[in-house]
Length: 127
Image (cartoon, rainbow, N blue to C red; front, side):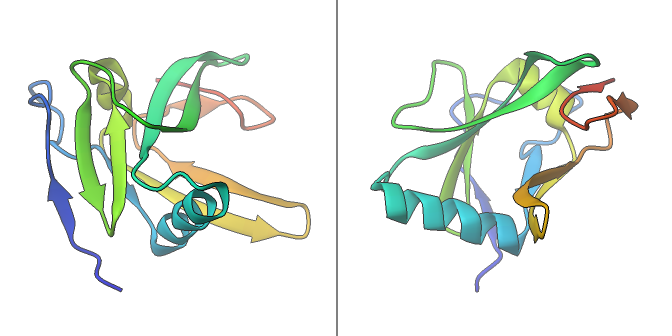
């Protein structure tokens, strides 16, 4: 599988943050592609945003969206079109997203170097 990441930015990244803030692991790419195929969302963007949530204050919001919003940063990795907004870009800089599966469940796991702590249940974080 080609692991080349290419940038197709709609707007420049804010100064001091990488142009491509998030990298998906091979497992995450496969899961996004699986959902896109199963749900008929070909051509959609995998939207990754940081939103107010949980007891630690911030959480991740993942969606498949047909169109990006004005000012979104967009790029493509291994055939997956990805989008985020400028504010989320600041919190996501350097983040790797994996997809993990175990007997207790499956889901996306975030390795975010900007997260200083997270809540006990692991659904929110603080910077």
